[in-house]
Length: 169
Image (cartoon, rainbow, N blue to C red; front, side, top):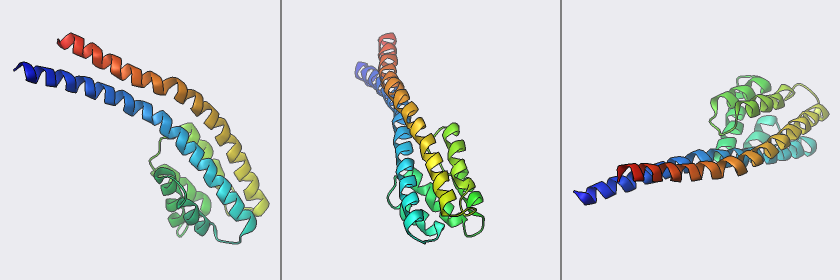
C-alpha cells in the first residue's frame, strides 16, 4: 500500500514537471518556426530573382528544406494555387495549418501573400524583404520571450510538482 502511495506521488511530480516542459517548448518552437520561415523567404526570394519557375513549384521545393509545421504551409499553399489566386491560397494555407506562431505573427505573414502573383519580380522581392524585416523583429522578441519564459515554466512545473508531493506526504 505504501509503495502504491509513493508511485502515485512520483507520477504527480512527473506529470507536473512534464506539463511545465511542454509549455516551455512552445516558446522554443515558436522561435524555431520564425527562423525557419525567414530561411524559407530567403530561398523564395532567390528563386524568384534567378529562376522563372512557377510560384507553386517554388513553394514545393522550399517546403522540402523546412520543418514540418512551416513546410505544411507551403505545401498547402502550392496545392491551393490550383483553385485560388496566390493570395487566397496563401491565406487559406496559413489559416488551416497548425503552428506555434502567434496570431500577430500569422497576420503579418499574411502580408507576404498580398503581392504574390500580382506584381512583377521586383514587387514580389520587395514584399519578401518587408516580410523578412518583420520576421527579424519577431525573432528578436521571441528570443527574449524564450529566454525568460522557457526557463520559468520548466522551473514552475518542477516547483508545483514538489508542492504537490509535500502536500500528499
